[in-house]
Figure (cartoon, rainbow, N blue to C red):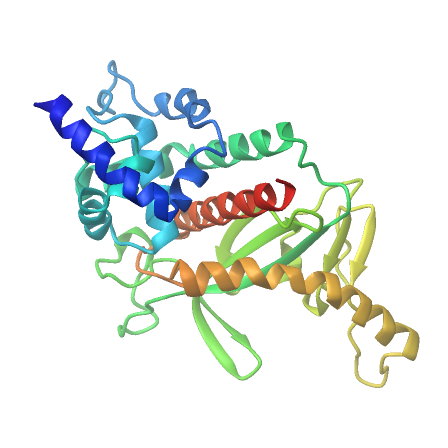
Length: 314
């Protein structure tokens, strides 16, 4: 019976393949099995953490990536994975699709064990093995990821004592005349390949200049929000900002325009993640949970950019 079902699914998939299956292209870009040793460490049959899940760990990682690509909730991810052949192909035509509760528990285990960062590091290792190293500088920027502040008084406890769906540790920040509540996603993108190389999530009130994702030996491009803060990078290409009584000189304005042409490239990942992935507003309630969601949004964008690089090189 299973052989008959597999045959039917493969026959149906052939039609989708003729129309073009971008997910199949994305799935082939990286070595998914490389994540297994990382994930296997979060399950231990000899502790109160519990044993391994009946579901394959790589299948769950792929589901988190799909979820980010399409901006789906856990229940909707379960439904779509059962309904869409292209999703099932991406997942390897599993006999059983994990339910949304299993997906939620898996994400929670990743967060508690902090293994989501190891998954990101492994992805970056694979990118470097492909020869896509940082050569022409990096660009850093940050963007607000909003959350629900709730309607209780400001002095009502947040943290672990909070018993509402509102954010537990989100903070308020003001940009221009607009106030934002929640968190901030900081990313570092390389100039040449436009791949996200590093990321970090903070509360919204954390100033951009307090987060430096650059490293020694790099050239970093940054906007005026970072002005006055020296980066770790060897060459600082931060835009100048005028101060009271000290307007920008013609030379500084020209420098700013030159930096802006490069720095503006970093706006694209944020636009894709917010508008396409619908990841600009979070319903999870802590910075660690938001960071995990942000990480898989960055993972999804990186996969899509790798596909673009492959298309241009072929």
